[in-house]
Length: 362
Image 1 (cartoon, rainbow, N blue to C red):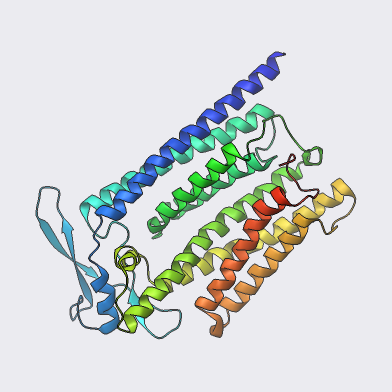
Image 2 (image 1 turned 30 degrees about the vertical axis):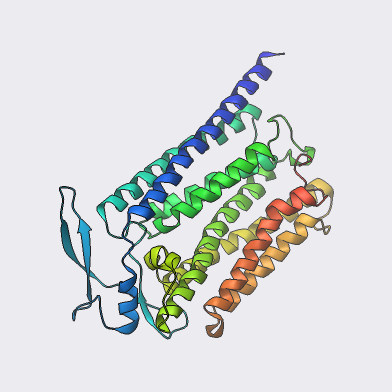
């Protein structure tokens, strides 16, 4: 065994250790997010109900009284402006929920701990991806294992970027961390591939361009998918309140603290709309690469077909969402169908369908 090979194996082993270490830290972040939801206030359902009925929870100036636990004991009552947003259906005004922490000191403390551990896990995972790349001296997405660990790294990076930009997205922290743990668990068990395996057709500079943009698009589509899914739950919750019905325990404990349906609807639309041009470029770049590698730009390979189906699905969603009559739940269902197409393109095509895009026999 030559020295270069030994060094590669050492770097590959280091990458594996870093990935497993990031999973351990993500697990701590998961429990911290659980604590944030558990210890955060669960009595804010009256705020949304008041906004729908115009009765309680707000004073004449349109502010909301928020009770915040103090570190030294006791509570302080803060006057916070009521955030009013127009619902997607245009029929009601609903405030954003107070977030997972619910305005309490303990809940916010656990939330900050969760974000801090997520940042640490992200850095460790990113180091694992870099070590994997150095171990083989190429882009670290030559097979499904590498694609998966890079995908979840970018997804967390996108989430943290939104936090840095001071966007109200900490509500998705628990869902994101859970999904990342599932992705890494699947990657390290079912999808794991030795670092020296590479499909011959992937020996191209297009590997850096085409696959990297596909990973970025998938990560951002995932963030938008979370927003769309939560929107459907929150919209049902608001409908029950508007109709005078009593929401269930889950709605009172969790959904009452989420952003309003209107905010979630706008958030998902803007995320998907922002990344859609990059997905278009990804398909074009893939066609150019196919022309160089296989002598044809389009050959109805399963990956090509499902990439185009995904493009069409998101195009339909964006068109429907931009049309007044398709705002809200109808457009949200289209968004989830589009993301489902992307997921099948990600997992199903590579694992269950034989084609030229199959990664390293996985």
